[in-house]
Length: 275
Image (cartoon, rainbow, N blue to C red; front, side):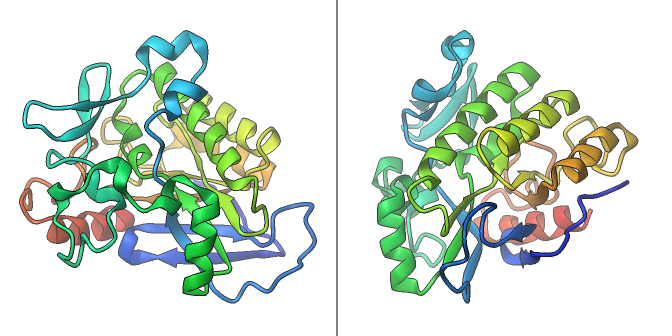
């Protein structure tokens, strides 16, 4: 398997506790380096607005767009063509600072009440300044479940809509907010198309994949992905891997730790990144 080769000006960042690794260039292409990058958040996350796919998805997929729903247990979920994605306990904890420490109970917060900076770049910059963070590379939250969407065309439309929104989110702060594109690996051809679109039309310098298998038991080193890696090299486009610790895709350990989020997170993120 070939891989995108980092060249001069690239730096490798990893965040093993969150299951991600990426090569990134600072600052973004075409911008003068007007600030020092002493502290970089290599695994930042946005919170997708409730109306993201309503506003950004292509018209032909509008009726099939992801929807926020309340399930039979009264929990907020993301529904894609009737398939419920995300934690059965609800998605409210995605934006709740303190949920992992037990300060905030996962079921007590509505998704829309999550940290404001997840939705709003201006609020995020305030938080980054308070924490002394110079730049952030941004991954999705709900989008980590997109690998479970079975139809390649719909998956590609979801990625295109998300990437458009993410580009708009980062636009006010091009030297500090760097979007990591979501790629529809359900189809290698469509993933290559989206990579090219993200690079050439949106100015993004990298994208992410889940480390989990997308096609049966085929690993990311399978020859079927060679055209994907070739395009990443040709576009000078870095690729990051980010696990999601849900049963939406084949995931190590989730069946053994269904009721223990911390254990499920530690096992799945660590093992999937190594596999």
